[in-house]
Length: 276
Ligand SMILES: NC(=O)c1ccc[n+]([C@@H]2O[C@H](COP(=O)([O-])OP(=O)(O)OC[C@H]3O[C@@H](n4cnc5c(N)ncnc54)[C@H](O)[C@@H]3O)[C@@H](O)[C@H]2O)c1
Image: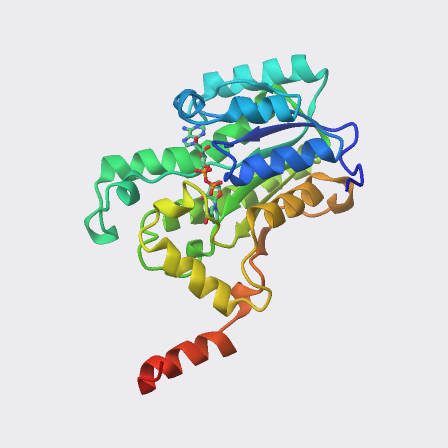
């Protein structure tokens, strides 16, 4: 079913690697809701993933861009505006990577070169993505730019490591650039703080299954899936959310406001009393 809430809109979607990616689901739904889109990912991800299938499905083109390169990003916006025939109405930044996490380095033992690389890819690239659009004046008035975050930016989650710091910076960039872009050009910028989701990036975090289950058990509505996230993203690209900006929006089934749930209580009671 489609409501056509993105009819006539033009968007750029970063980060669809394979059909598990959150960006993949967003691209499919955005196109269904009437948008015309351009897909992009880092050149190496284009070789490893299956983005061309998505391009075919969504009747879109793929323009490679390493989101840490201003040159690539500038080229991406220029080519996208040319292809789509005008300014861009929405952008999804769905990018994350930590070398320390990948290589199993603990937070207290991090390799700073890897930390810097992770920050550049996961957080500074959000600033660059916005800045490249700003420099070219590529966004339409009332356009919407979204990044994806996780609650470890605000609370400690064992093994989330330096990605916690990267997400804190990502959320801060949405606020700071959101102020300037809102004031001067009426463009809104937000981050969505999403539940743990089974994707390549998600399952790279050590003990991901534990994260996933605990979060599902604690959230009254259960974890939000990638499809749920796509629906939320599309609503934030639409004209129904024009005055929402500079926010970190929790999309987590209620997790962020919970302390203890019946299900988690039962699990712990069982382990405390030794009952099966
Ligand atoms: N999966 C989860 O549990 C979860 C939860 C909350 C937030 N998020 C966030 O959602 C976003 C999308 O992740 P996902 O879970 O869909 O995983 P994913 O692995 O499918 O997507 C991550 C994407 O980042 C891209 N990328 C990496 N380096 C890049 C670069 N230099 N330039 C351009 N693209 C680059 C990858 O190619 C990949 O497509 C990330 O920001 C992630 O942190 C994920």
